[in-house]
Image (cartoon, rainbow, N blue to C red; front, top):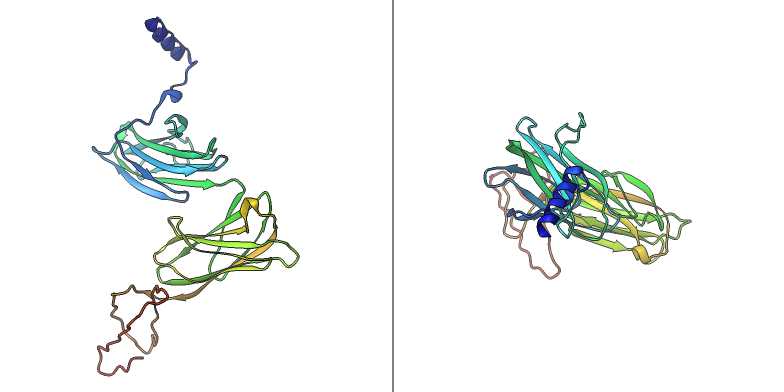
Length: 303
């Protein structure tokens, strides 16, 4: 009976009733690596690294876009597969067949996540082109969430309601920037705004929620490293909240200075062209700080 069952499976496969994708598993000795929405990771295939696994968390209804781009299409033709928590392939792509994107690059665009959980991206090379670097990018759009961009000195208008409960704005900041952001609700709306700042790794740097319609602000947040940062405008209570309405988001760079940590020092020069140099550091309430300034020129009277 078992032999007959195996023969039946082979016949069904040959006739096309069983898809090979449904039987692909992510079983591999390769270690998995965490990836977040918004990440772009560059990796390279080698004799010891022929398979890469990347895991991420997603909610049901999220729309994910995964792009896999080879640094040199002549030496690498990569493929990707998306696996669910049960290690089953639920989507895959080898060649995009898009000349602008790259015929042999791979991608999935706005794939709807079926269930909340942890998912795995499996990246493999074509055996005929097994070597080379690739860049994997993961983007995700949560249910009820929209995205945009904003620049220093600029502003953006938006609306929060039961359909769109949060909007994310990305911007580029540099180490030593000191920034502030404010979300102000429209005078005729009921929106109780909330604002959150995330760093490039999606770690929360600051959050503020209003108590009533008005403004929610983040003041003088120090940027520790160059990267793409995200401001999220939402409403108090998110899904459980009832306020809604238009808002205006503003972003300013209060200062750009040299970043120092406790114990660090800096050599610099004051000239007629540069008469003032600013430094910033992160301090906590109760810290006792000592700041020393030593001149290296006999004519300098430092302050």
